[in-house]
Length: 361
Image 1 (tube, helix red, strand yellow):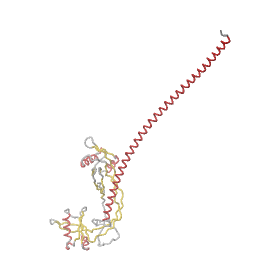
Image 2 (cartoon, one colour):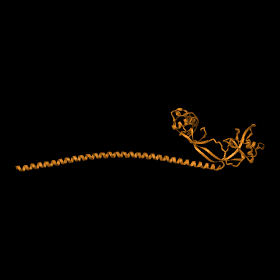
Image 3 (cartoon, one colour):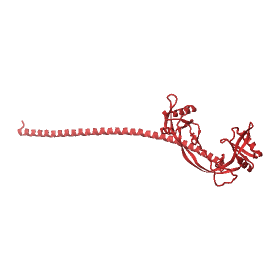
Image 4 (cartoon, helix red, strand yellow):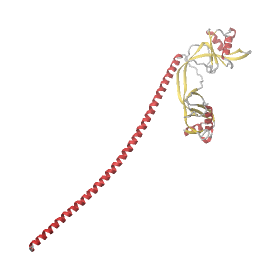
């Protein structure tokens, strides 16, 4: 049987052990709570890292797709620019070739540009002098400008320039064809370079005459009759060295072997010549003037009543398409009005429009 003092000591030891174990337990519980907290924080950071990783990955995929789209866009644009460069290079070669041909033609007639005209009575009177006097004569020249048209274009001249300006301001037009079909064309203004001043050194050819006011007949028959008439001395003529018919003006040029013949004929001016069927026709004889252009000044001139249409596909017969365009732009509901002239040039073809002063096309 244990003594009372030993039991007390044993109880105190047990109590202390219980306290020590409780302290250890509390520490374990605290450590466990800390571990739970740390584990929760780790899970939070792991989730945030995962979310950021997914977001960055998605962003990289989108950036990669955008980059591929940009690369493809620039590749297509580069191919287009290369094609355009090739076309421009080809056009440059054609232009250089045309320029060389033009320079060759100009070289052939350098210093001998013929001014084939009837001398205006009120401004030039032939007095028999053949040397330059230092006072150049003035001639009235009517502007006639040739405008080369590209394929798939049209020129429309309206009666009222306000209508033309309205069509140009609208720019894009949907032209209705048969059924529900339509084509889209673009309207542009026309600017032409026209001469404002032309200076020429002129001289009268002493052995040549210009015969005008001729009847409408075969040119060879007409030249034969002129040579016969002006080849006779009692008509004031003489031996004809050469002859030429000007198709554009329908005038004739006769060159004599004797220098004195031309002067006498031009002084008389009006001559009656026998033509087929014993008909008499009065012709006019004036000096033939050669000239060299020494200076030309030009300026840009707007065509207020004419509109250039581009982007016209060859979807139907050219005549039908021209009629369709004219009908469309005549209608006030389409912004149009009365039309004085229309000219359509289909794709793949060439055409030349002639512009004259105050008349449009």
